[in-house]
Amino acid sequence: MEKKKRIQKSLEKALSFEGYISFIEKLHLENKATSFQDNEEFFAYSKLGLTRMLRIFKKTKLSPDILLKVKSIAKKQTWLIITESWCGDASQTVPIIAKIANLNAQIELKIVLRDSNKALMKHYLTNGSESIPILVVLDKNLEERIRWGPRPGPAQKKVLAYKARKEPKTPYNELSTELQKWYNKDGGFLTQTEILEIIQWTT
Image (cartoon, rainbow, N blue to C red):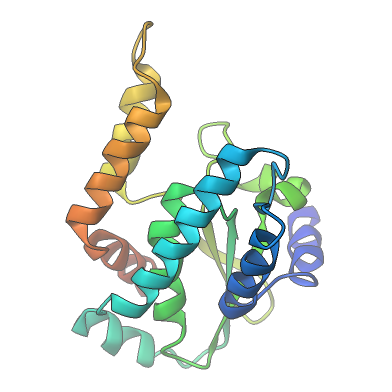
């Protein structure tokens, strides 16, 4: 019950994908990201992420299987995404999720910020960490049906392998570069595939 109340509270200040993009653009006019707002590095990540999100949303072609399955959804759903503008994984996957959600008016996509919703994020930890993005699929009564995230399976394996390494580790930005290369090569295919799989459980 506590989780549902936190979901409801977060949804009160949630943004649509378009609203989220607009919010980031306004922050960028002040040289800020959605959090860590005094950190120039996070602002740089946020600028890169915005450019990437807009490009991916425009250019991604959804698979015939996704088109068919999503358009067949007949029951109202809310897709809640927990994210931040500077997150590299989110910049690759959130625009694809948004494009999928746009296929059917029964799906209402809502985006909330992780660092502004700490109480909610506690319910969606990944191996104890606040990894994002997280997609939560809710039914019309805001009951959770299934969750996805923070990244497609192969990318998550790369992160887990990195965390399991003993010292000394390579810098995390090298892992981030490796992940972005993987995303670019994959072209959103596995994000679509995994979202299709969770849709099977919610319709």
